[in-house]
Length: 97
Image 1 (tube, rainbow, N blue to C red):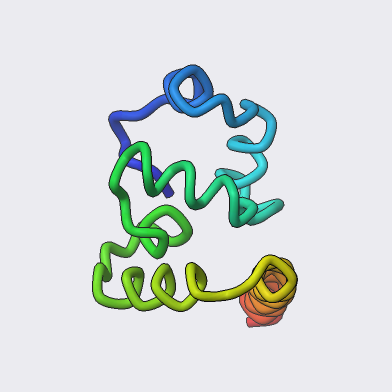
Image 2 (cartoon, rainbow, N blue to C red; image 1 turned 90 degrees about the vertical axis):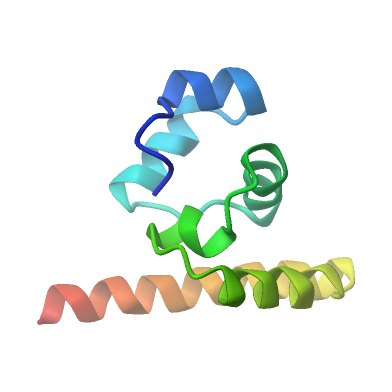
């Protein structure tokens, strides 16, 4: 998820993202909110795809960031809901296999 050199405490102290939220992400219980993703991206300069998956596909991340940044607030909320829905579907499919 995030660099192995970063601890939950460090991330919490540096970004003010709660420890419980970070732990939920690590366990795969929840996805980071769009605000948290942007905070992590801006603070650590990590691609969003890397934050979500550990995969460092920068081209894909830049495309997602570019598209997301062009959305109005309403569509950003919709995008976040849809991303969470897709992520949950993916988790279900992994459990089924």
